[in-house]
Length: 530
Image 1 (cartoon, rainbow, N blue to C red):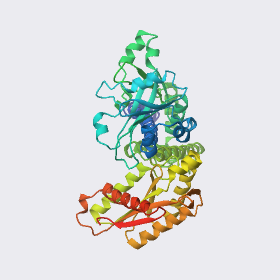
Image 2: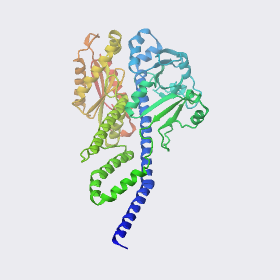
Image 3: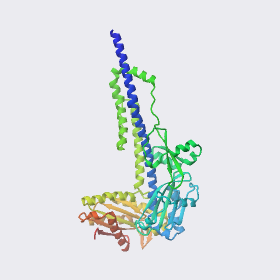
Image 4: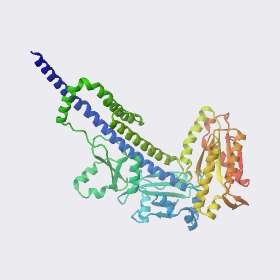
């Protein structure tokens, strides 16, 4: 065999081997890997949509809670007046909060007052009747007799299909702001998932989806109806198993046949197809220049793409996406890295915004009661496990009901915001948390448990509020003031495991009551257990 023939045979064998290798890699490794990646991306888009809908519903639950656990609302249910509604529940306030319907119902399930936006097409009585349908073990909007008898706050929330549209609802028992006492009724808030809200959720979650009446779409054809019957429930959280341009789920009521269809439109929808002409051309080019370009190609192109792909794949395991390196020899890779990092910044900003909605008070901007409860869990854990003492302050704006009656609800909101800002300014000097507890009540938790230090902080808070010079001519005082109840928890207290935060909070409430009895605009301090 001549050298030329041997070279030709060797080259032919090399080409055949590389071709078979490339085909094997493509079909047995590349395509399965890409399929898994596309499925993972579509699953992540579904998970993001699920989380975004849940967080949007939680913000409604928080707002409903803030209104329901309010002493003035308790009084209103017992003695309804138009003045209270005009001052505290104006239509424009609910419109600004994107609330489409509000219902105040007493313990006998009698409608006391309601507000309903034009976006809900059916009549008021139809929606109220829907809430009274508690004929299944899975559906209940109004509190049960047992929940009312417990004399503690309880909430119900979820999704309903009403007139071919999806709505959020949240219901909370109406009772005093302490969270305990005689229940006067319940408050229900409703938000329609309309096109505007869908667009907002799409921007926050970075996924595109739509919601439509499934009964309307299924009535057009028998085949569509059959496929709808086979659809899964949206909140089932079942894993996506097939790649498709879009996936459909259903959200249905448990007590009637009303149902809507949720359609998620995916960004990556198909697998790449093998182009044989291009594959052969690339193969010949690789054989001709492999000895000269393999190292350069690996260094400049393959390795950056592998790192890029690995970073994205690793994010599916720990839900943390790291930035890409931006310095590349190839401009296109540098542009892709820059675009990816910018998209990551936007995603993190939207994620932080959605998380902030759950722990931030919508009026004052400081931590709300939900955030306070999360913080107290850590404080109590340290108290139980490490015997680390702390202090709690309950702060109440003096004669705030008269302030609202005299100056109006909007002035009252401005006053609460000013008080909250002042609390934050004082707390900036100390190791503590200021939160809105509900209504005109605020709560402060301090890591310090020295009696004199805490008394000094309380006086500083009281003076700072008075120095705001918010006009409030009541009880021979010119300015709005606060009363403060303080309890100091000793780090050497015995058997701390048997106490929880509610015990400490009760002592602080008792001191707040004593401060009010003493004439208001004062602080009362006691040691926990005394």
